Amino acid sequence: MTSQIINNFKRFDAYAKTLEDFRIKTATGAFITILGGAVMVLLILSELHTYMSPNISEELFVDTSRGHKMRINFDIIVPRISCDYLVLDAMDSSGEQHLQIDHNIFKRRLDLDGVPIEEAKKEEILVSTTSVTNKSSEITKVTCGSCYGAAFNESQCCNTCEDVREAYKMRRWALPDLATIEQCKNDESIEKVNLALKEGCQLFGYMEVNRVGGSFHIAPGKSFTINHIHVHDVQPFSSSVFNTTHIIKHLSFGSDIKNANTAPLDGEMGLAKEGAVMFQYYVKIVPTMYVTLNNEVHHTNQFSVTRHQKSVSNVNTESGMPGAFFSYELSPLMVKYTEKERSLGHFATNICAIVGGVFTLAAIFDSLLYHSINVVQNKVMLGKTG
Image 1 (spheres, rainbow, N blue to C red):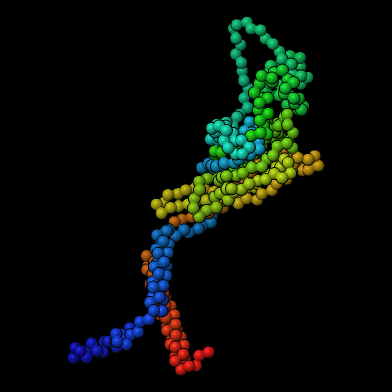
Image 2 (image 1 turned 90 degrees about the vertical axis):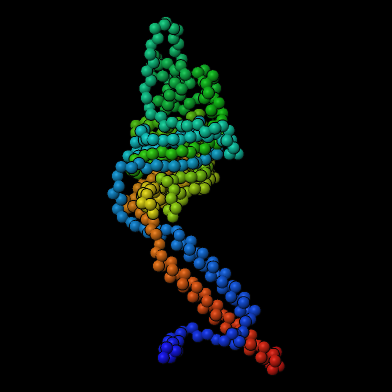
């Protein structure tokens, strides 16, 4: 009775076995078996790597976050203008300068081959102040230097090279050759002018600004504002002599995170082929939030760039100022990336699919190859080939 039940139960076996004596092993079958096993191992390892890495989901919603600052990281090389003649200015969307921003900006002098000349020095973003000189109790001889015709009244004195430059700036006159000015003969200005076009400069660091639209630029000359107009004084040079070729080694608006386009301009080079060129980068920033598996939240920004350049070296060309100008605008939408663990059941299902699929395809190829070889061999034996 028991044996009959077992025999009836055996009918449900979907994997009927053949006798060992009726099995034929071939070299082609061994090759397909080894190849199928190698493919199976590679696919399983790939699936395991996918399972171990988190699944990242994306969400898009209106940005309602407030309070935190935006950090601008940059590393830009200007290989044909010295550090003494390069300035970095940052302004908000209303055109007012950022005077109270956290920053950590350095300048490194380079030779024309890009080799550092000295260690990087910290560059301060200066605020215009009025200096007050305390009167000395001692009686000293007071001299009044000439302003070379730029004085507004007879009592105005220009005792330093900087005083002469300021007087000419207020008059909006072109500055004469510094070598002809007595106050500038022992001043460092002569050396700075001589090296202005014989060195390069690397500017790097970061600025932390409010989360509003704005701009910053790197341009030659000393910057100041006249009647709410931002002006760069490049005297005794003209703007057309400055080669504003530059290399953007890095530019980002926040920390770098994987799977996000946080630094698309890295390695970009702006080549000035027509003398003085104004490079304009219009940046569209998308606030981004990244949530890890440990529920750590990282705030950063992705951005896209539209680039434009124009020559400003000739009188007949468009108006502008040579340099690299970056205008950024924030999107009202935020992208959120969230890391999630992958399903163990999904992993097991994929493993079973890999094993079953490889075995099935290997069996089909082995069967086709085996029967094809048998047909050819039979034809050879019967003398029916070629």
